[in-house]
Length: 113
Ligand SMILES: Nc1ncnc2c1ncn2[C@@H]1O[C@H](COP(=O)(O)OP(=O)(O)OP(=O)(O)O)[C@@H](O)[C@H]1O
Ligand SMILES: [Mg+2]
Image (tube, rainbow, N blue to C red; front, side):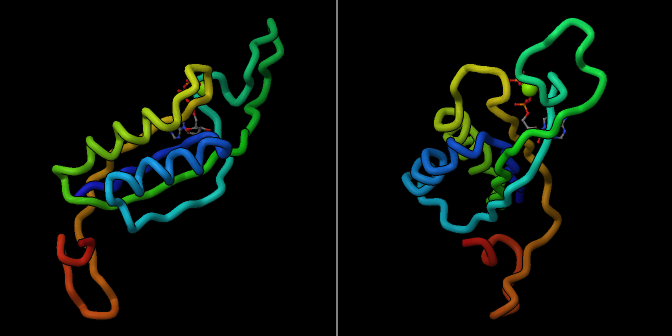
């Protein structure tokens, strides 16, 4: 199993949710976070101005799926979240060792389907 962890612009959340719904994704966790990337959180680079890291509001979406679905989901997020400007975000694909559904005790892929 893989955790698809996407950091996106908050204003793209509704578009991404719609795209995920279209491909049948149900389980997800969404968190408001702050972060920075290559530009250290500055949308413009002023000469000599980047002394500090500036943390910008982002939304983190986490979805755990079977390995075979991870790339499709990542591609759907890329398409829905892209503006083409810096700060569009990133997606991390992270291995997940185990999943357990608390209600039933099911584990493995049956706990996420
Ligand atoms: N290396 C990283 N590790 C952890 N989180 C990161 C990393 N890079 C980016 N992020 C997260 O992704 C968010 C969006 O990053 P951002 O889109 O600015 O990435 P970037 O690599 O600078 O790409 P771009 O050049 O398009 O801006 C950040 O606010 C941060 O939450
Ligand atoms: Mg950036």
